[in-house]
Image (tube, rainbow, N blue to C red; front, top):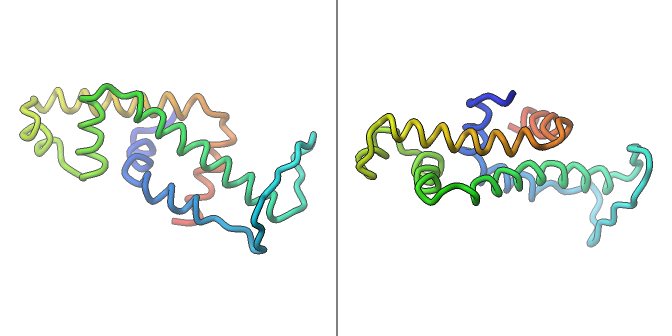
Amino acid sequence: MISNKMVDWILYNLPLLKTLIDDIEPSMSASVVLVPVQKNSHYDSAVEKIAIKKATLSFVVDAVKEGIRTLHPEQRKIYRMKYRAGMSYKQIECRLYMSNKTVERRVKEIRNEIRGRLEALPPSYLKEFTHFFDQVL
């Protein structure tokens, strides 16, 4: 199961994660990267390895972005306030005239939606994602 801590980390750092994935480049330059369909998972080319790694990492980020897009407008507003603006529960409840319990419940709903999207991915994608960002960050 994916922890709240991991979901929060991804949501807080989503813009940075997208930038880091976009900045992945092979050691040699290539204007077009073609990934051939092969029956085995052994790739000799550095360009192929980078393209596959980038696609795998992007798949995880895309799942999170799709989860955010499917949130109810009120949940999206709370998502932006908490994870993009870094507001506390207290600040959110004052701004939106909600109780602390309601804000907590909405954040829990947001986490559950994103967790569901992540858990629907192949486990190897999440393993690659966490391994890559453990090394980079």
